[in-house]
Length: 345
Image (tube, rainbow, N blue to C red; front, side, top):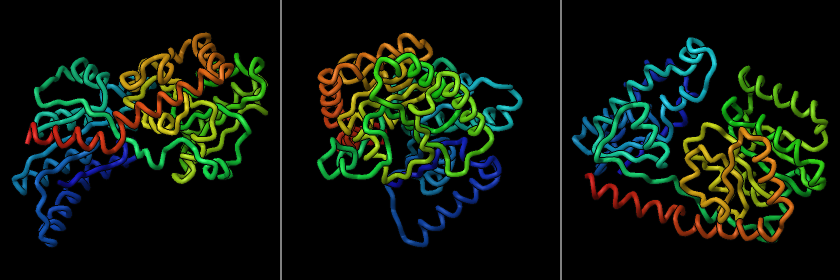
């Protein structure tokens, strides 16, 4: 088996999508032939890799499989903005057409959540018998409850903090989180908010989000309570999760939310949007809390409830770790994929 994987569609220049995918397919075919490789099947992740997977699998007369991870029509539905500008930036029409072609051609396909499956039927008017729901897995050796040595890693963060880690974009809910934290900060005075991620070289859209965040921070006099730490290197992700009091993912549009699972694997209590795909992972009130992030009162009450109750927060973190170990470790997910391949091969 070979898995063909790309990053999310929006980070790939459209000229690569339109002009160079056939070249990538031909290069992969040549590499496989030149090295006398023999794969039983090909599995593409994200739509551009799905396109390449169809080409390569067809050439070698092998089965093809696909995992969408995110759906173009769902993203378009949630992103808002000027339709013409958004189409120019994200090429939704082309993406959606190619997604449909991949859906209809592969031997089998997986979606990461039940929410995605609902959106596939609703927005694409598509369903098939070869669809399974398999969530992404987590490296539970890397993302683990902290040891004494783990806690010695210098993260340059406050002593106690709520952690948010995601791409910086308008749909990620940073404004919602800041508005909720503003209602909590004077009740919980010893816990700050740390917001991480973003790209090493922010583009205008990202800078616009940062500017809006700064407006909310200034309006609520939170300059000394909120840290925007920018891009987080891979090796620092686990230490930042491990030292947090809790982790928050406030996205309104989130097909899944790997950061939430990584935090849970570290034994950290999490709060996430009830409208994202993570709702199929978390049992509300047991191993995490699900909220309407657009409701500042509900969101802030959830923050306060966990920050004010160490015992409840720690118990939730332990339950979260056990859930990830049992259901979402790489070993558990690999077993699910082997059964999936055997079903549709």
